[in-house]
Length: 407
Image (tube, rainbow, N blue to C red; front, side):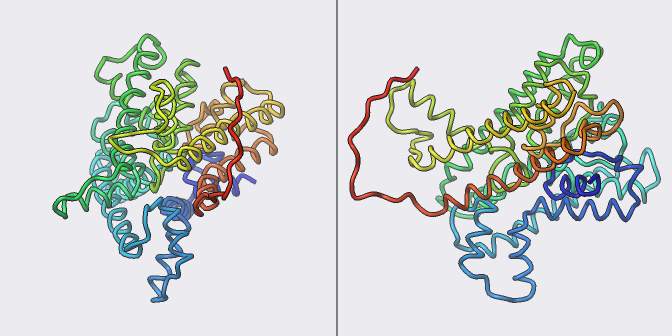
């Protein structure tokens, strides 16, 4: 079961561990783990397309639709070219990140070891996996600016979504090209959540001697910013998360549920889903019939889909936490944190008192629940998207409006 748990955690790019990646895995085992992370990050649908390209077969419309949904591509035009671009972007950024990290790690170990650790952490960060070849994750590099910036940049670039890359490339390559609403929304919410999360983390922990209270303002701000970004949905940590205040853990749960942007390597309900739900609430207060953003209105079916995804995510966290709390004799908040981390494919955990995730101390049934949560968090949104690919059916008749009191 532990082997299945680890493989699932890798292929869903979650990062929850029940075995020490540094000590319990051989180099070959770590290579297999890295391959699973890369496959899971790029997405199984896109990988199938890459294989079809490699053997020269034509890609049918159904395959294109599957890949488009996996990448949240807004249209099918030039999809094969887009996939090739994604591979170039992915391996280029991972390569640059690996060189930067290896250069830094080489100060503490032989260059051959540093290069491997650099490659592993770069791939893990870009794919928002959170796996580390260090037993203490990145805690030894908590105050290292280069490591913090490199990992944070890879997390952001992997989680922002490939469709944003395509849109920005088109903007710089073509004249009079208008940046899409999706890109504006994804960038605004991603940066906004990162900043607000960092401020919240710092304010909540600044007086705690176990976390940020014993550190200067600059080091404290760097730790807060790192964990705000890692919560959506990378899972790297430079602090022992079991030392955080309950209010901070709850804030991180909210960030883990939201996750990254569509078409990227991150999980969660996605930033654009969260944004549309918030814009819907704002439209109610403004007494507007349409949900609007930047002189554009959102289609009704998109608003309903966002509401449904948000409801299902909250329902999943609530239901799975209920069953886990019934089975396990552990603190409730720690169990909810573990479930949210699994569903958001994050990898954060308050730990088992050592270097492993809390899942390592769960019963077999508890591990099965977390394992299922990881699968649900990774492939659930994709399945919902595939179901909603067909446009809404317009009926030839409409029932009279009902009057129902709410609130």
